[in-house]
Image (cartoon, rainbow, N blue to C red):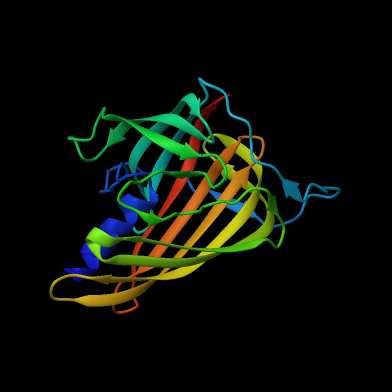
Length: 234
Protein backbone atom coordinates (compact mmCIF):
# COMPACT_ATOMS: atom_id res chain seq x y z
CA UNK A 1 0.00 0.00 0.00
CA UNK A 2 2.77 2.45 0.81
CA UNK A 3 4.16 2.27 -2.74
CA UNK A 4 0.76 2.91 -4.31
CA UNK A 5 0.31 6.01 -2.17
CA UNK A 6 3.71 7.37 -3.15
CA UNK A 7 3.38 6.79 -6.88
CA UNK A 8 -0.11 8.30 -6.94
CA UNK A 9 1.22 11.46 -5.33
CA UNK A 10 4.13 11.68 -7.77
CA UNK A 11 1.94 11.30 -10.85
CA UNK A 12 -0.55 13.95 -9.76
CA UNK A 13 2.19 16.36 -8.71
CA UNK A 14 4.36 16.12 -11.82
CA UNK A 15 1.43 16.43 -14.21
CA UNK A 16 -0.04 19.73 -13.07
CA UNK A 17 -1.96 19.91 -9.81
CA UNK A 18 -3.40 16.43 -9.95
CA UNK A 19 -5.22 16.68 -13.26
CA UNK A 20 -3.68 13.61 -14.82
CA UNK A 21 -4.28 10.67 -12.52
CA UNK A 22 -4.29 7.69 -14.85
CA UNK A 23 -6.10 4.41 -15.26
CA UNK A 24 -6.09 1.98 -18.21
CA UNK A 25 -8.33 2.49 -21.25
CA UNK A 26 -8.97 -0.04 -24.03
CA UNK A 27 -7.27 1.92 -26.82
CA UNK A 28 -4.23 0.64 -28.70
CA UNK A 29 -1.71 3.32 -29.59
CA UNK A 30 0.82 3.48 -32.38
CA UNK A 31 4.52 3.24 -31.62
CA UNK A 32 6.64 6.38 -31.32
CA UNK A 33 10.38 6.68 -31.55
CA UNK A 34 13.23 9.15 -31.44
CA UNK A 35 16.62 9.24 -33.09
CA UNK A 36 19.68 10.79 -31.51
CA UNK A 37 21.38 11.37 -34.86
CA UNK A 38 22.32 15.02 -35.15
CA UNK A 39 21.10 16.74 -38.32
CA UNK A 40 23.99 17.80 -40.57
CA UNK A 41 24.64 21.51 -40.26
CA UNK A 42 22.47 21.94 -37.17
CA UNK A 43 24.18 24.68 -35.19
CA UNK A 44 21.56 26.02 -32.79
CA UNK A 45 22.88 25.15 -29.35
CA UNK A 46 21.20 27.82 -27.24
CA UNK A 47 17.44 27.92 -27.07
CA UNK A 48 15.69 30.88 -25.48
CA UNK A 49 12.31 30.67 -23.77
CA UNK A 50 9.44 30.82 -26.27
CA UNK A 51 7.00 33.72 -26.52
CA UNK A 52 3.39 32.67 -26.04
CA UNK A 53 0.19 34.25 -27.31
CA UNK A 54 -3.38 34.01 -26.09
CA UNK A 55 -5.36 31.37 -27.92
CA UNK A 56 -2.52 28.90 -28.45
CA UNK A 57 -3.44 25.30 -27.64
CA UNK A 58 -1.59 22.02 -27.12
CA UNK A 59 -3.33 18.65 -26.92
CA UNK A 60 -1.57 15.63 -25.38
CA UNK A 61 -2.30 12.00 -24.69
CA UNK A 62 -0.90 9.81 -21.94
CA UNK A 63 0.08 6.21 -22.71
CA UNK A 64 0.51 3.49 -20.08
CA UNK A 65 3.80 1.85 -21.07
CA UNK A 66 2.99 -1.36 -19.21
CA UNK A 67 -0.10 -1.94 -21.36
CA UNK A 68 0.61 0.29 -24.37
CA UNK A 69 -2.79 1.92 -23.94
CA UNK A 70 -3.95 5.50 -23.93
CA UNK A 71 -5.25 6.47 -20.50
CA UNK A 72 -6.16 10.12 -20.90
CA UNK A 73 -6.25 12.98 -23.42
CA UNK A 74 -6.08 16.60 -22.36
CA UNK A 75 -5.74 20.07 -23.88
CA UNK A 76 -3.94 23.12 -22.49
CA UNK A 77 -5.31 26.49 -23.67
CA UNK A 78 -3.19 29.59 -23.01
CA UNK A 79 -5.59 32.33 -21.93
CA UNK A 80 -3.69 35.43 -20.76
CA UNK A 81 -0.30 36.46 -19.33
CA UNK A 82 0.22 37.19 -15.63
CA UNK A 83 3.69 38.72 -15.23
CA UNK A 84 6.10 35.82 -15.95
CA UNK A 85 3.28 33.31 -15.72
CA UNK A 86 0.45 32.35 -18.03
CA UNK A 87 -3.09 31.46 -17.08
CA UNK A 88 -3.77 28.09 -18.69
CA UNK A 89 -7.08 26.27 -18.96
CA UNK A 90 -6.87 22.48 -18.73
CA UNK A 91 -9.57 20.45 -20.48
CA UNK A 92 -9.88 16.70 -19.90
CA UNK A 93 -11.08 15.51 -23.30
CA UNK A 94 -11.11 11.79 -22.66
CA UNK A 95 -10.41 9.60 -19.65
CA UNK A 96 -11.11 6.15 -18.33
CA UNK A 97 -12.29 7.88 -15.17
CA UNK A 98 -15.79 9.02 -16.09
CA UNK A 99 -15.84 11.56 -13.25
CA UNK A 100 -12.99 13.41 -14.93
CA UNK A 101 -14.48 13.50 -18.42
CA UNK A 102 -15.07 17.08 -19.52
CA UNK A 103 -13.56 18.66 -16.39
CA UNK A 104 -11.95 22.09 -16.79
CA UNK A 105 -9.55 23.82 -14.39
CA UNK A 106 -7.33 26.91 -14.48
CA UNK A 107 -3.62 26.83 -13.60
CA UNK A 108 -0.58 29.10 -13.70
CA UNK A 109 2.26 28.13 -16.05
CA UNK A 110 5.86 29.27 -15.41
CA UNK A 111 7.49 30.28 -18.72
CA UNK A 112 11.08 29.77 -17.48
CA UNK A 113 10.70 26.23 -16.17
CA UNK A 114 7.55 25.10 -18.04
CA UNK A 115 5.99 23.90 -14.82
CA UNK A 116 2.59 24.48 -13.24
CA UNK A 117 2.09 26.19 -9.88
CA UNK A 118 1.02 24.02 -6.95
CA UNK A 119 0.18 25.66 -3.63
CA UNK A 120 0.84 22.41 -1.75
CA UNK A 121 4.42 22.31 -3.03
CA UNK A 122 7.52 23.48 -1.18
CA UNK A 123 10.25 24.26 -3.71
CA UNK A 124 9.68 24.08 -7.46
CA UNK A 125 9.52 21.35 -10.04
CA UNK A 126 11.67 22.34 -13.06
CA UNK A 127 11.14 20.24 -16.21
CA UNK A 128 13.12 22.78 -18.26
CA UNK A 129 15.31 25.76 -17.41
CA UNK A 130 15.73 28.36 -20.15
CA UNK A 131 17.92 29.11 -21.91
CA UNK A 132 18.62 25.51 -22.91
CA UNK A 133 22.05 24.55 -24.22
CA UNK A 134 23.75 21.24 -24.87
CA UNK A 135 25.44 20.03 -21.66
CA UNK A 136 23.61 22.37 -19.29
CA UNK A 137 22.69 20.84 -15.92
CA UNK A 138 20.62 22.03 -12.98
CA UNK A 139 19.50 20.59 -9.67
CA UNK A 140 16.22 21.10 -7.85
CA UNK A 141 14.30 19.85 -4.86
CA UNK A 142 10.65 19.95 -3.95
CA UNK A 143 8.40 18.40 -1.36
CA UNK A 144 4.80 18.06 -0.28
CA UNK A 145 4.97 18.58 3.49
CA UNK A 146 1.40 17.43 4.06
CA UNK A 147 2.21 14.10 2.39
CA UNK A 148 5.75 13.75 3.84
CA UNK A 149 7.11 13.36 0.32
CA UNK A 150 10.49 14.81 -0.79
CA UNK A 151 12.09 14.66 -4.24
CA UNK A 152 15.61 15.55 -5.42
CA UNK A 153 16.48 15.59 -9.14
CA UNK A 154 19.27 16.53 -11.53
CA UNK A 155 18.46 17.58 -15.10
CA UNK A 156 20.88 17.45 -18.03
CA UNK A 157 20.42 18.76 -21.58
CA UNK A 158 21.72 15.88 -23.69
CA UNK A 159 21.31 17.04 -27.30
CA UNK A 160 19.05 16.96 -30.34
CA UNK A 161 16.72 14.16 -31.39
CA UNK A 162 14.21 13.68 -34.18
CA UNK A 163 10.96 12.81 -32.41
CA UNK A 164 7.87 11.25 -33.97
CA UNK A 165 4.58 11.88 -32.14
CA UNK A 166 0.95 11.96 -33.35
CA UNK A 167 1.23 15.72 -34.03
CA UNK A 168 4.12 15.13 -36.45
CA UNK A 169 7.91 14.96 -36.59
CA UNK A 170 9.94 17.52 -34.62
CA UNK A 171 13.57 18.34 -33.95
CA UNK A 172 13.67 18.46 -30.18
CA UNK A 173 16.22 19.02 -27.43
CA UNK A 174 16.37 16.02 -25.10
CA UNK A 175 16.48 16.77 -21.35
CA UNK A 176 17.12 13.87 -18.97
CA UNK A 177 16.08 13.91 -15.30
CA UNK A 178 17.43 11.47 -12.72
CA UNK A 179 16.69 11.55 -9.01
CA UNK A 180 15.17 9.94 -5.97
CA UNK A 181 12.30 10.41 -3.59
CA UNK A 182 11.58 9.62 0.04
CA UNK A 183 8.11 9.22 1.50
CA UNK A 184 6.53 8.44 4.81
CA UNK A 185 3.13 7.56 6.24
CA UNK A 186 2.13 6.92 9.81
CA UNK A 187 3.28 3.31 9.53
CA UNK A 188 5.83 3.22 6.70
CA UNK A 189 8.78 5.04 5.21
CA UNK A 190 10.49 4.17 1.92
CA UNK A 191 12.62 5.53 -0.92
CA UNK A 192 12.66 5.09 -4.69
CA UNK A 193 14.13 6.35 -7.95
CA UNK A 194 12.63 8.65 -10.59
CA UNK A 195 13.75 8.83 -14.22
CA UNK A 196 12.22 11.24 -16.72
CA UNK A 197 13.06 12.39 -20.23
CA UNK A 198 11.63 15.49 -21.90
CA UNK A 199 11.85 16.47 -25.56
CA UNK A 200 11.42 20.21 -26.13
CA UNK A 201 10.72 21.52 -29.64
CA UNK A 202 11.36 25.21 -30.46
CA UNK A 203 8.97 24.79 -33.39
CA UNK A 204 6.14 23.64 -31.14
CA UNK A 205 7.14 26.03 -28.29
CA UNK A 206 6.46 23.21 -25.83
CA UNK A 207 7.52 19.76 -24.75
CA UNK A 208 6.38 17.35 -27.47
CA UNK A 209 7.17 14.12 -25.64
CA UNK A 210 7.83 13.03 -22.07
CA UNK A 211 8.65 9.62 -20.62
CA UNK A 212 8.35 8.86 -16.91
CA UNK A 213 9.41 5.91 -14.75
CA UNK A 214 9.70 5.39 -11.01
CA UNK A 215 10.45 2.54 -8.64
CA UNK A 216 8.70 1.37 -5.50
CA UNK A 217 10.23 0.79 -2.09
CA UNK A 218 11.66 -2.57 -3.20
CA UNK A 219 13.47 -1.03 -6.18
CA UNK A 220 11.09 -2.50 -8.76
CA UNK A 221 9.68 -0.43 -11.63
CA UNK A 222 6.23 0.74 -10.59
CA UNK A 223 4.83 3.46 -12.85
CA UNK A 224 5.95 4.07 -16.42
CA UNK A 225 4.11 6.17 -18.96
CA UNK A 226 4.58 8.55 -21.86
CA UNK A 227 2.96 11.88 -22.81
CA UNK A 228 2.81 12.75 -26.51
CA UNK A 229 1.74 15.87 -28.39
CA UNK A 230 -1.34 15.07 -30.46
CA UNK A 231 -2.33 18.46 -31.87
CA UNK A 232 -1.08 22.04 -31.77
CA UNK A 233 -2.72 25.38 -32.57
CA UNK A 234 -0.27 28.31 -32.73
